[in-house]
Amino acid sequence: MSLHFDGTLGAAFLGHFVTSVLFGITSLQTWIYFRQHHKDPLSLRSLVFLLWILDAVHVGLITCGMYHYLITHFGNVFAAIKPYWSILTMIMVTNISNIIVRGIFAFRLWKLSGGAILVPITIGFLSLYIAGDAFYFAVRGLSMTSYFAFHQFSWSLYAGFSCEVIADSIITISQCLILQRFRTGIRSTDSVIYVLITYSINTCLLTSVCAILCLMTFALLPNLFVYFAFYFILGKLYVNSLLANLNARGSLLENLGRPVHSRGSKAILTRASTQVDNVEIRSNEFTTVIDPAVLTTTATSGMTEYTV
Figure 1 (cartoon, rainbow, N blue to C red):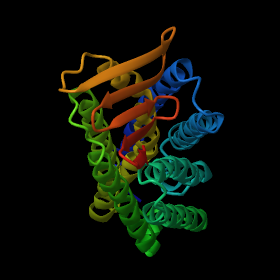
Figure 2 (figure 1 turned 30 degrees about the vertical axis):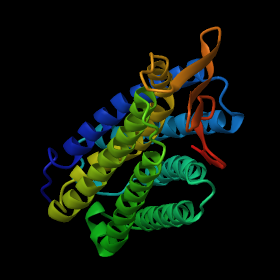
Figure 3 (figure 1 turned 180 degrees about the vertical axis):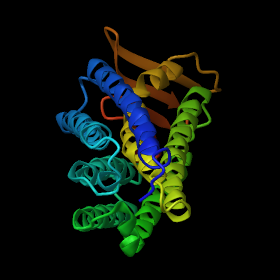
């Protein structure tokens, strides 16, 4: 039996290398988060720590699988195509991590929309289906004698990744539409809104492109493991996108600290040592308060109040 190791184990090895680099970035971002945002709610800090633990387990499972194929069974063609438990367990860990990240984004959308539940519930149902589909794929994969047999239930992979792209698109579009409502006309405040919108778009773009590449390589290169390389990376992109959003709050608040040139308006910053407690921007028509501890914004106009 002939097997092209460059396109199978070689592709998986490259994916493992990129995954290890991204785990280093995850660890750095996690350290920065706990160092700079220790006043965040305990629930959020606990979830961030749990995500880091899952990320470490994720890269550990991939390393275990690569050691099995490249060291323990070096050059063994039959071992190379047989599904290994750590790789399939990694699929489950990836989806547990992803559902937590989407849950945090869904909670943010719930606050942004003033308590509207349709979009968060939709994201929740999609996330649960994606996780259930992934668990089904992994469990059934354990009974397969070859990775090539995965095409017997390829519908599961296509459905799961399609739902991932849809869920990420809903999160991004909803965030952008809601954030547009909080434009105030003040240059410094609007710059924060634009940055948040950019982060939202970039988050969806990276994860969606990676998910689409998984689908394309699985469909077009069925006898290679290129799709594994992209799937290894996918989970890391979700965690890093969330941490990047959380850690960006400091620089966003620095933008708010710059002089505001707007007729009839003024900016008031309250600081405790080097920690920004809150930022309040007032004008003749509105008041905007940004609380970095929970990354929320309360905008008041007349008798209407919105919370971001």
